[in-house]
Length: 260
Image 1 (cartoon, one colour):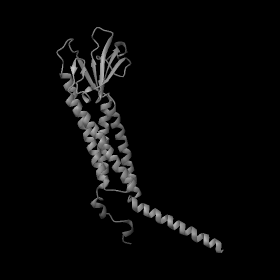
Image 2: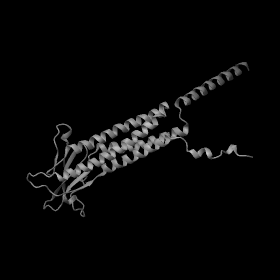
Image 3: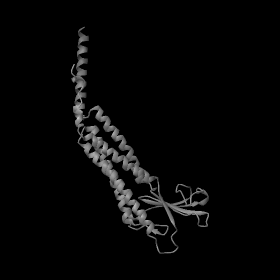
Image 4: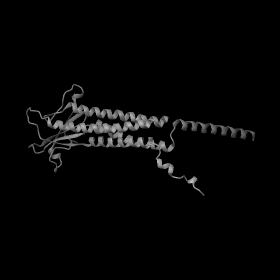
């Protein structure tokens, strides 16, 4: 009996010490389980936006430039470009869908030649189908996209600190970073649209004459647009988590305070 009571007292002390440690850990984290779940859901939404943003910025299918098929040849030329590089393709017209007037889409098999833009290194403009890029506009679009990724990474780090250290004041920082990242991506898309317009208008005077072109925005732009919207939504969700409870919540009587 004496030994059994001793072991029971030791077990009770151990359980009490473990309970106190858990309580201290909860006080240190400062996040209630429901609030922590909301923050994790917001972080999951942010992960979707971050994946789309990285996929958009890192790929070169922002816009496709296509020549017309009616050129008296069995082949036609197409190109697709993004923020960092461009690819020209020579496609067989037999592979192009029958109802399509222009060459493409760029995903068709064919002879490809991809090069990185030189205005990031030597400052030279690129030449595509006897047309010249406007490097200042292209550089601005790329810089905006890189800034969006950097600000998004800072926001992710802030939310991770909230979950690991309980620093709830960083929720506002994360909300601001995600909102700013979404806006910067939208600005980058708009600046890139202007760079495409400038490219189509800057026709060189040298022979041979520039072919007529049609252009269409491709799936990388869709990823960038989706990423910006998701990041703006995530910023709004984190901002809502920083707001105080609704003022009319205190007007609702609790179940235990009802009069008998």
